[in-house]
Image (cartoon, rainbow, N blue to C red):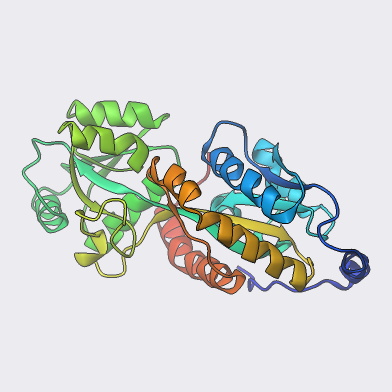
Length: 313
């Protein structure tokens, strides 16, 4: 993989100069994201309205599905077109050849949200911690199954990283949909899963599943009673992140302004509450912090993807 540096290409300097000649923003903005109805769409819409009020311009949500990044990458670097994307943007090159657009086509603005997965087991499994799950898996190699829903998402990567770091032989059972994976886990057809909070926690609360830990590096403020997997496997971390970008070459003053306003939106109590209700934590960090996070994930998660031979659907 080439170095991930965000530079201002010479061909974009004219566009940048033209953008800086007018007060910003002087017209509506658009945030391009994936298809309507998904997590990216939900997050974009929660951010767009208060961001528009703060900037004094309408912020339009533009759903473009799988083409979102490709379209955003070709937009003028003037601060009027943004992209909200998950880590597929920087991890997809590990899972698919000939990717049209890459994270190097964008300037980081801020991490918007982070969602930890929940390690949940069937209640009949005789474990009550990550430590005892690892011990059981080592005592019964190849006997325990973990459920996933799709290739290359956090549910899948969390399981592969657990296998690698714990040094256990557990068998992946993949499903087309998360609902099918959860149904079979609840039925005892599989033994554990690294599920997403929104769909997993209701079953934990109903005692149909037992939660052992969260996959974030630090304890989750939304699930403070759960330990982290990292407390048993130091260095373990998997989370679903959504971040906001501008096309590469966007002038620094515009990036700074957007970062400040978006971070303020993410820190608003009403916005936080809406995200928290679905098991999602808001972040709101600096462009430099997001760039560092991406580089770290490319190294850490990219290694897991390559070793496990994960290919995107």
